Image 1 (cartoon, helix red, strand yellow):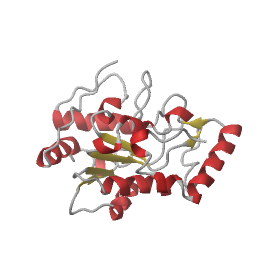
Image 2 (cartoon, one colour):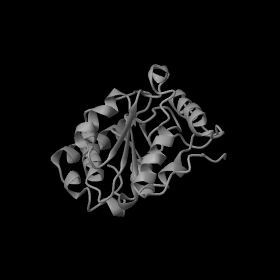
Image 3 (tube, helix red, strand yellow):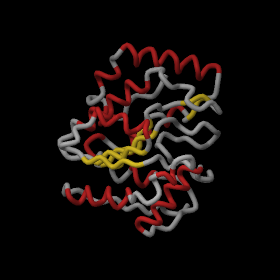
Amino acid sequence: MTPPLPASWQPILADEVARPSYQRLQEFLTAERAQATVFPPEPQVFAALEHTPYERVTVLLLGQDPYHDHNQAHGLCFSVQPGITPPPSLQNIFKELRSDLGCRIPNNGYLVSWADQGMLMLNAVLTVRAHAANSHKNKGWEIFTDGIIRAVNASAHPVVFVLWGGYAQKKIKLIDTTRHTIIQSAHPSPLSAHNGFFGSRPFSAINQALRAGGQKEIDWQIPDR
């Protein structure tokens, strides 16, 4: 099982939680946790929703699959727990952030300060078996997180959707592009960062879109820990 949804999201996602696919997903996760290590730890599965209440979402960054090694994943896409070396994609994010806005590269990859400022850091799949990438793909999480994207799309205020890589960009069909801003580029993975992520300046573009919508910009500097 997974923990209850954070309070602000419960009425928003009530229909999603009631779906048979969500019930099957819970049964799958119960069986998985009984026989294998699953990341992130159970209390952190909905950390993205906890840090960014529905009414405060101004940016949605979409990832794909949680990190699958010990002590990495904690429920926010691309972020790792304190004391863990940032994985290559996150290192590339920090390089682009320095190039874009001059931010200092921090000594950690703990991105909670972004989430606390209104950036919903959502993976399409919210759990993974240890050391087995994409092992919880097509088990029901995608149906649920598509519901989250639709809910954010229905927000009363404009939102900036950040879609890095082909997987994330397929979600454009769920977004009203006449109301919201789409920022897309290649994925920051070492396999693709040089094919359009580096030099894309997403962080200044996000803040520009937030300003245009009358919303508060994000302070992108991750504090050292």
